Image (cartoon, rainbow, N blue to C red; front, top):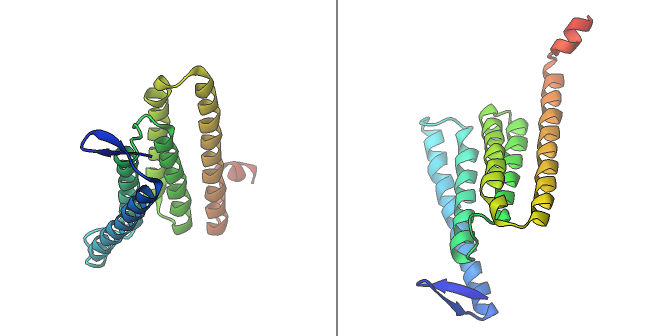
Length: 173
């Protein structure tokens, strides 16, 4: 394992890197909890709406995770792992937005999935070979299809629980 210290890569024993990773994870959890408490105070005081609470806390976590992966593990922003994290986060926001009925979180999730696909096409694919490009296209295509199925599934469930009749059903009646 090579660790970046002052711009120089030095060999670090696996046990030390494991301890360092554990400390980073612990500090990350503590900082996410601190942001959570700060945002919760803002929600309780009425400065922001409740739908912003999970969005800000999870956004902070994703940014923190991305920053740590890039700096500590020398991953480039062009690495597909970053795109995968963004797509998984987008899917989680969409599902959470439907479960809690927060339209804002669903829209942000859809926006993040669009940004992840744009990152894939503009940045990630320019640095990989053609074989990996093909695999990436299929993987992200399947992921986007899964996101659209999840969105449609939850959207239909909400329509059924509200008793809303879609336009197609109105024209049949």
